[in-house]
Length: 240
Length: 378
Image (cartoon, rainbow over all chains, first blue to last red; front, top):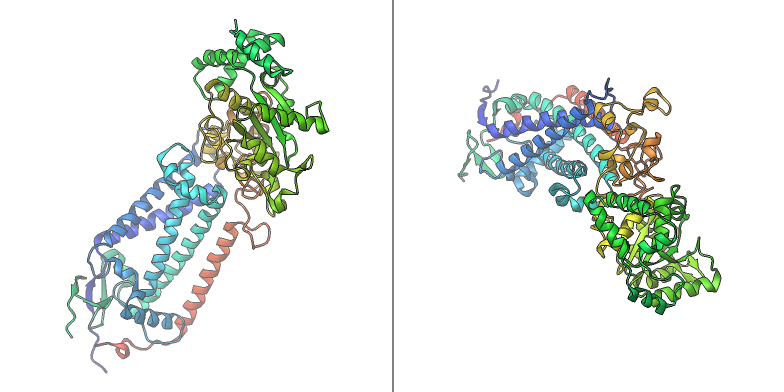
């Protein structure tokens, strides 16, 4: 028997990262359900005073604002110098170390290699998917607020979104808004499956990390974008 | 009553036109339109222009004094539906008064002259009143192959539009075809049809889309021009804000049913008979800007939603391509065969992704991974 594995604890998700994650998750959940009800109102008001659709739309708009605030807050937070939440973490393909890790993940996912991946911060493939998710969010914000702003064509929001109206008719915008929702649903399926898989395979506490902020790894050196990180997620100088 | 100056009479006499340039008020008096009807008309127009009621006397005074503007009406690739909408106005007040106010010097459908006589009438009007007359265009303009697909008296519509609209004080593009190309411009657009502004970019164009355009909006636009001497404030699509500034959905009489969640599910069902919201029947009111709910058609008799049919979105650019199918909320996705909406494709995608990951999960469960010890770094 080889000697027992030593797992070390790392603080990977700071409190603002976790708060943004859960606000976004909750908003997306509410947006998907209320959005579906707006597109296909299976609800039935009993009297003209019931204001059922009114409340569904209200929830959709409030959740939309919550999501955009949460996403902007997360983007601003990525300007800090933390090992696992800084903006560099989102572009693993920019560094040799990141590309190497991406290749390891890809090989594992496509059953080419049986080597278990072991990433401490963001999984390099997952983080690439998050960049895609942020782009979908951007499209959803533009189309969503453009459709919303039509109630006040003289307003500031309408004026700000003028390029969007010039680009396409609102019916086409509506269609992309629906398609965007399905892309996000596809992402969520992928996301939940992947964290589950990685939680089992890496044994690093992947799922609980988004509640507690801590992940565990048996790796001796933890890198993020070619820099070594300490257990609080701060960059430390690599000794060569 | 009306103030009409002798110099005006003299001026018109000089022109030698059949219709002297008396003030509008004077002409209406001659035609037997009572002062009361005229003031009623002015009040209606004030309301149509979204001006406060206190403006009605100013409108009346301005119309009393203004000289009859010369108007030419060009028919291009159209169905003459907008002319019909104007001429078929049931109530004598608005429709007749506007025809009495205007000196319609050229209108292919209603003019007595034909052939070379008609051509001469148009020619003499645009030469005599260069930069002063109002041009109304009905129908789209063919641009493909130098516009040969649409010709009147041997000249292409493009040629006529460039000449007539180019030297008009203002051009009113009446109906969706003239404003944005309309049905003629729908895919595949065989004649390369476009609206007036795209065909003659230099012209001052006021778009009055709608299929047909509401005659009241045309009258109000002309009255606005006569009263204020300038074209009304317009939105980014070149439409007057007084008529196209608000969304149909937001002024709809069935809106409370929308907010309440009361929808028509099938034509003729109980909800339909009760007058519930037509949202699920593909009403395009939530994406269409027009004053139909307030102005209504045919002397305020009715409009589509009032009669139990959803809005077709006829006054929006790319109507027909983007607003179809008429009885569905969302457009079909091209390339996926007919009757496939974004949501059917999206659901298919989600099911596909879920199945792919389920298979991945099963395969992973059956595979033996290398132990972490074997991969340990350091």
